[in-house]
Image 1 (spheres, rainbow, N blue to C red):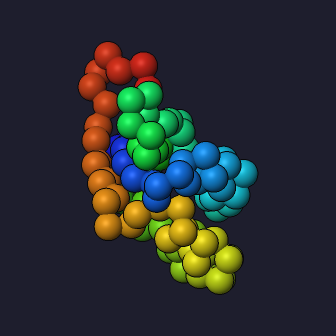
Image 2: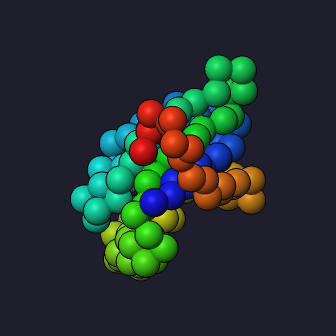
Image 3: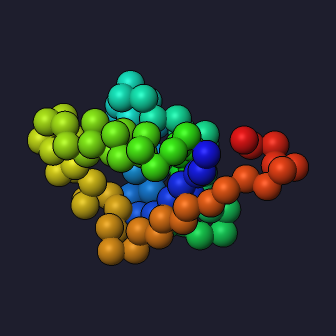
Length: 106
């Protein structure tokens, strides 16, 4: 099992719109495809910071879920095209992390 800690930077003045889009459209869509999303966060001191965490049982599951989400017509035609207006894709940072034995989040 591993996690993706995904750090995004929103376009100027777009963080509230991005959070609404994530929580009302992207997260429900991905969960509907089988993704496990553990959290959605904003920075307290950085007004453009958005972080979310996803969990995968294996690399094979991650590949299958990525295909189900990112190769879907809904993502390609509806969700994906709206992202650049709110989020700077060039600043995406994705970290693959594993929980330690005492981590509450497993």
